Length: 284
Length: 258
Image (cartoon, rainbow over the protein chains, first blue to last red):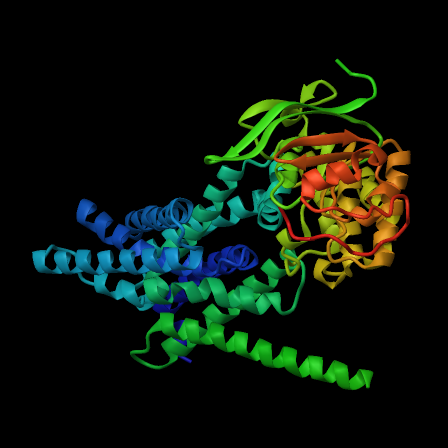
């Protein structure tokens, strides 16, 4: 196998796996909050920030673009909250409004960049679906640093997040600063999405948050083990997708990762169904 | 500062939601180590009052004192048990996880529970007869067991005052009796139990003190003084036959939230 001796393959593999790890862990928090679509909203919401960062900085450095992505992801989450708080519009409609508006703004910014014929702009259009094959060691370093921040923040605040997600009022009575935890949760989502834009793109990124968490929830009914299983599914799906896309030429990595993760989810549903049939037939 | 025999002092409390008055000028002194029922029709401000008592809601005017000190400064002394429908019963959480939440504020993120804390969680589970169910996911419990699981969390946190919003909703007569017995043993152990209650039929049989609300305070005192037909007509606008003292647990009245 020439694939496994190819250094480019390893760069992509490491990057994709780290993106998947951060997304799977954070995805569990959104899943138990019944708020998985916030990931989708923030992923779409990242686009204008990325292009605005490019316009301001004139560079395609992932760290810089991820900063823009994180900030504009946070803006989209704040917009959703503001709409829900100030109007009679519900959460789902507010997310739909914000995600399409932010995405539209991103597309407009991109065409502005393309028409202005700015230097270094090649590859910016790839951020809709991702282009993991173009990943460099510098990108992987940024991804590693941000994933580490996500991981540490989540570990340190795990209990706080758990109480908050389950029972806001109890959390408040225990002295948890609710505004702070909300900001933390939004930041975790924004960061994990921002580093994944290059891998899976604004449109597909949400799948990396949703699928591993949904798969894990089928097999465990406690939060910490759920995060553990989701991480395993994320690593497996990320690896599968990268191998599948690199094994044949001109295959996009992001979509293959998404397909792999969804396949794992489908297999898990099937397995769950079979085992429940087996159990009930034993009881008879 | 301790005011003898008085647990919670509510002084000139008013809460507005926008232009709507939820509660107006409530002043009550609630006794300690009693089972106290907050009653009144839908929209009479029962839940609002409960939230002010726990410090979850800051009143627009007035204050709530627990033994002379504002509740906001000593929230750990109270435990609030929310309405059943406000809980996500599908949340990936075991019964033991739920009770361990009582210890979150008492340890740092990398610390495991101390042996003493593990013991407290275990004895709370034991007191609520849930040891055998501690690994179950919370949604797999019956209605009465779910309520007891939350009580166990309150016990583990060593709260002096337990505040419950409609604890009997969706619970059958047998579990209701069990829960009432638990309230009574907690009271006898010196805890104050405050609950929003709807069922006029059994109110007189286990409540030591009743607060009757309708946006403002209509009456408070022992049930036989408060649950009179005159006052109930004032509160609910219809007359009731009070099977007073009768131990009937018919599920009368409305059970929706206010």
